[in-house]
Length: 142
Image 1 (tube, helix red, strand yellow):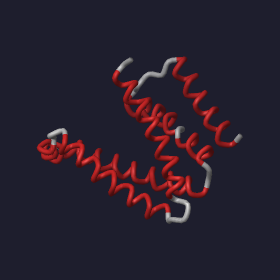
Image 2 (tube, helix red, strand yellow):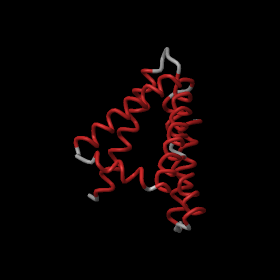
Image 3 (spheres, one colour):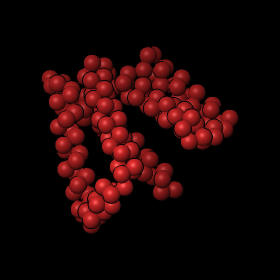
Image 4 (cartoon, helix red, strand yellow):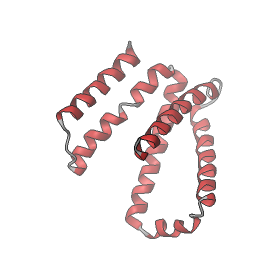
């Protein structure tokens, strides 16, 4: 099995746990405050990973590359907004409604990759993207 596929599957499983744990944790709490606490926990955890891997010295390399840093910051803001909206949706909806709609991010990512990077979409990829779209809507609204 390819390394990327293993990591992608681990990402999918842990993302599913985010939805489940988030739904349980948000029952009587403000979604934005809970998201902020989650972000602090993530930051501490990820700093720990960098320290354990011995890569703390690489922080200066990231900070020195201003273009890369700008896009990392923008990615962080987009991720924060994504999780604010996700936790608000989870608080007011069900996991089976919100999680499939959230996965439409795959569709949006492919469309943006085609527009911004000129990535090619094969017939099979197009069919798959269509199936993801229809499937997400069927699961969420069905």
